[in-house]
Length: 228
Image (tube, rainbow, N blue to C red; front, side):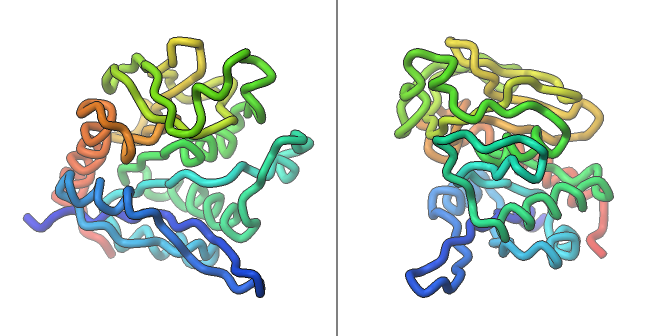
């Protein structure tokens, strides 16, 4: 069969004149290609996200800047650097639409995992440095160990926020210093969030191996359904 089509959510950045640009880092694209998927970029347009789901066999929710917690009734931390509001609206629209595509495989990476959690009511740690004396070991692609049910090994991370709890998800992975690193919705075939960046992780299991799990699930989904 043809390679499954993987929608990769775009970041939204603006130039010095305020003109928006939809971007995806090359590392996400090449990771999907290495795993046998065909990547397409999903622009950060809230009104079109539901329609986009009919075109793909799986989704990667990419990393990016911080969640604006104010729409969820939580004040911003002084160290928060929030994402573009239109991108956040698009990501929330995507998560809303996924309620009607419960078998569509989804992998949330870093911010993507945080969005999954916050959308479902999980508490967000807005600055892990407030809780961990060496929070920078989770930033700048620093490598640290993670143990999870989808694999264990050294991962590359770049974040200063994390989920405080798994809420209705199953907590399936933790760092050696207690940061929640992976969640899963056990009621769906493949709906997983990871706090690290598998597309930049060298460990075969925790890097390409995680992307390969999404591609395998997307291939099964493509065989069992027809996109409208």
